[in-house]
Length: 389
Ligand code: AMP
Image (cartoon, rainbow, N blue to C red; front, top):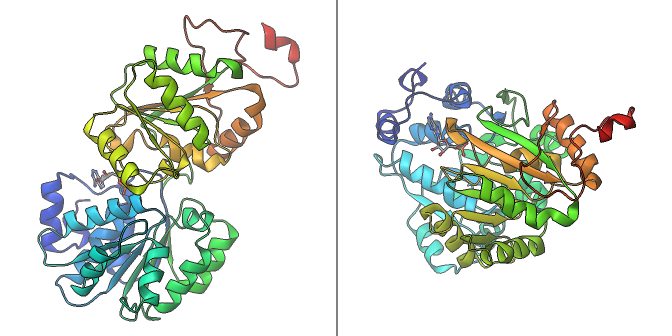
């Protein structure tokens, strides 16, 4: 099936052609015809599967020409909002549609100007959008297509009430498209309240890593984590690499440890200002830094092409975050490797990840590393004697 068969408009097909996409991805094949038909959609898909284009392409095809504000896309973070707005701009390059990007942490001036220009599409984070609604600078009555992206993340970040208020302000006859990696009860309730008879689209096994990612675990004595990280980096041929850790403090410590050993590393977490976060991402994208050290703030959705490796300095608390973290590599059919360092006290978290993805993750030993104790490559709880073989 080609993009032409999906019923997209000519200007959109032209933009896809220029972008060099050869054929639609699985979620695009499923979602685009349903969205063009005007139906509500609930979709879950693996990360890096072309989810953004799956909603942006049909919506731009339906809008066709500039008139009034008809599309609202809600995103959990500023970075995601920025990325999605960029994709909308790219896919609508051969139309006269206008896009406004609204997020917090920066002044109101430029964003207000964008709203004065009557954008057709608004991409926003909930907090800043509500500010503009309260100031009556924006009115959502004429929203015909509401896209709620990364909803589980949005609710995890405490945006439930904000999202509810925003949905209520949109036209009741709108089309609603909801994307979420997981579907806890709170989201199911939101779906039954905010969507009408939605088509349910699920691509592949939910919450499983892309097949293009090779991933493994390195068991380790916790005292050796920093030395091990340096040894792992030295033995790995990487182009660009993201190191994830649970806390901001860890992230800063890792970056300092690496800088002292002449690695080009930059940090990304919520205590850094928006300007610093933008600069970190820009520096990482351009290759000025080939290592980004980040908290889970960077785990979801960030689309940075060419990330060859991900290292988890520790196992994430939430098993879904494992899938999101390692999904920063192996994007859009390129291959990637993901390594996770873990110590015995994190075994429950490892088991939770393995339960979620439905299989055991390979344990490996790093050659020539001076291990303090024999790494636990085979843990068999019922046969403890085999452990030390
Ligand atoms: P997303 O899942 O929306 O974050 O997209 C992941 C990446 O896939 C982005 O860099 C897109 O530009 C790219 N992409 C989207 N659709 C296609 C396609 N049909 N063929 C190749 N790459 C694509």
